[in-house]
Length: 282
Figure 1: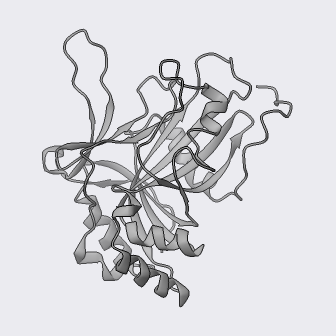
Figure 2 (figure 1 turned 180 degrees about the vertical axis):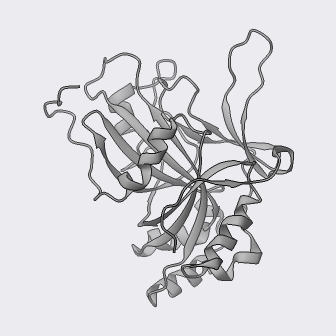
């Protein structure tokens, strides 16, 4: 495919971009609004709040109703594009995004489908262990969508990276025949490619009041193309290639944190230690 490269300038003027990141407008004196991922002018996801001390979040909104697949590159993504093909794919999907700096990162993922509130759910598991339950609702954060978990590893003694692939629409909306097509292809050894625009949020509670206090690095891949591929891979336990276009400056992380991602992502996966075990000095 490609090696992790230097950041590239991609995208079109914000007014022409089908997908963009926005701040919700509030009346004067009302404080900062929500961070939003917007598709075709409609808010699609609410993202982690600006402060960086609130829990990490991606929450699907009622107006998230469509994907951003491109028929023009569909055949090139059936396998693993290389050389000029991958540059063409990057440029094609870059034309959906607002002009800015993006770091293309090629990844191999083995997705696991997670249903909120059930086994493996980050929001009712690791996040509650650090932030506790929402003080108003008395419940975990709720993303309003099933999602895929793919990778996690320690960043250092006081931080852990969690990676998520988030479909623009629920997997239950996928066309069954398309999913079966990819199941068959993968059964013959094909490793298809999905494409995502990604953000990195680094979040940490302001106070150390939990049994398991540490920084959560949330790497979120919002699928532009590959909804059927991800479901097929999760169903069969097979890998897919994921071309991540990491939007620099759109997440709650500094340039130095984003620059570390390719190396962190190359590490062997490791789960967060049991919070009941002694914590390393911070």
